[in-house]
Image 1 (cartoon, protein in one colour):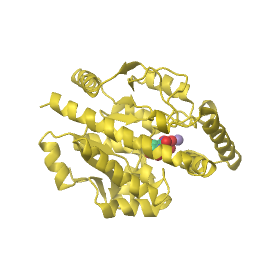
Image 2: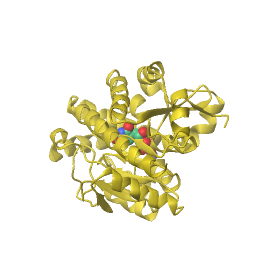
Image 3: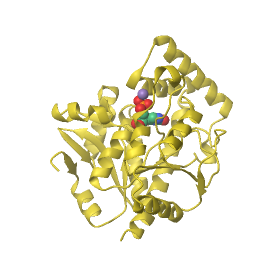
Length: 305
Ligand code: PSU
Ligand code: MN
């Protein structure tokens, strides 16, 4: 396929059936400030390797859908930050044909991972149904992609910048399983609890891999949400983080921020208001997701040998 470009390491790993974990790049360009974004991206890759899988950080660059980036390429995404285009499914034709630099969201990372033959993907949080979506119709393309693309996404759930209840309803409608890793409750990113349940709880990477195998062997199109709560020691106090989120949401509304700008705006605002403590939690939960994704990838590749 002319537009897909894999690093040599990934070509060999994928054709040899080795465990691989896809990683997104919007979290680098738009999700965290420089230099923590670059440091974290490199630490996450290391974490994936530490548990025995191969990392595949994904972006659009030089007219290609790229998987497996060099340190220089990751640095470029991190340094250019918000100047990099945030790319979702609809943006591929423009960004590829103009050979622009594009950071991939959960939705677009899933698209490229599937084309490359990668089934497991680790990130921080996914997009979902925004608060007030009844009138704005702002529903992340991540949910649509989860409905159609065969990639499992390990995340720490959904931030309460979104309407968590409506997000779960939408996923149910679209037939996307929501699996809790050692938990019956759907996590809310900075906190382990959200007040909402998961569809099923699984306690081991092997059981999760078996669920993925069953879904895809039956030709049930679409992804799976593997909801992995932030480690207890790094979780934030609910009332504190909720008050910051409330402020950020109100400010976005009064400034009239909409469309693809709103999620990066809210993420940046929360970081600013928390004086960096939310960034520490964010980094820790991403590392924890990288670990679980690597473990699931290993079990899944063992089942498919
Ligand atoms: N939520 C987070 N951190 C992130 C994102 C969401 O807690 O970095 C990013 C991801 O790349 C996600 C995207 O796929 O934002 C969703 O954007 P939107 O809401 O515009 O679909
Ligand atoms: Mn949106």
